[in-house]
Amino acid sequence: MYPYRHLFDFTREIFLNIGCSLEDAQLATQVLLEADLRGVDSHGVARLSGYIRLWEAGRINPKPNITIAHETPSTATVDGDGGLGLVVAPRAMEIAMKKAENVGSGWVSVRNSNHFGIAGYHAMQALQRDMIGMAMTNASPLVAPTHSTQRMLGTNPIAVAVPANEQPPFVADLATTTAANGKLEILQRKQKQTPSGWVQTATGLGSTNPFEVQAGGALLPLGSTKNRGSHKGYALGSIVDIFSGVLSGANYGPWVPPFVSFLAPPADPVGQGIGHFLGAMRIDAFRPADEFKHHMDNWINAFRNAQVKRGEKAVLIPGDPERIMTAKRLQKGIPLLPPVEKDLTEVGKKFGIKF
Image (cartoon, rainbow, N blue to C red; front, side, top):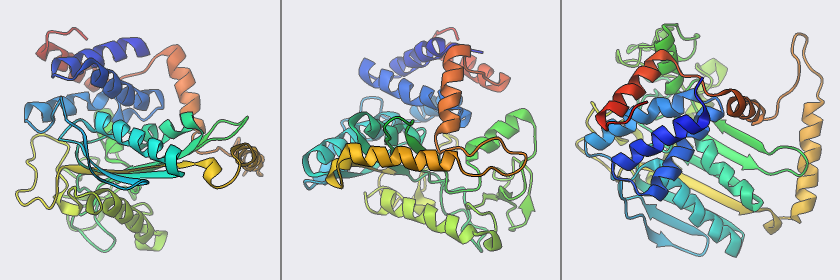
């Protein structure tokens, strides 16, 4: 187990050493470590070496000039200047929230960015201002649409955060695939097979091999197969891709650049970098905030008290498992798998920082 503070200080030093300002290094570290606290181990410090390799390949700008390329009172398109998505997305969310403060809601599309960590972090920023937050991003193509063997979409997550009054907030953060690629990476490190319905072979057959994507296979949309609703997961992933990429001027579909540095971006890009879409809605633009939050408490309590199936303990509200995990890991520390420890040790050596 590693104390949160230990991992925070180490990660911040790494970001400082690639040229990030102190403010940006702090922000990027906070976003990255939020994933570990919430139990989304695939998107936390395990990803740090991936960002560093992208920087070494010249694909991440540690000192981006983040600008607004186009805007209206309630919308904006932000150019991330090739910066860390861990920095670009929070800056864009800040713009969305300021617009919401002024006109009731704010919607920001982002181009020329990179992987932004967990979507939930960005949506949850709105909670601090009594707003509903939304965040989504496209990602490198690893997912085959229903009826296809070709990788056309990313895992393309959607996150929505909604404040309540006495109850903890509702926070949904989900990939539009049956499982995120990071979960495959965790199974690879643990040398375990995947459950059925996560991946398919290059010819479209079902597989439980966690290395199937590297072998030319693909992740499956949420639902896994047509008769289990994969066309719905495919549609959700497509919506994220259109909002994040087509709308902003970022790359989309099979043109989204890969996260791994050893694969070159497509030679015929249709946009700039990776795209995000973020939104904030002021509750009192719809009804009095206290009234809404009272009814959110009522909604949450109703679902918590729903009749439980035999063998199950309780009905959970989206955000409950992550909130419980955060409290546990702040107290007891964050576990890291041996391959991740080794990876971080090697990253530290590059900059003369002991892990």
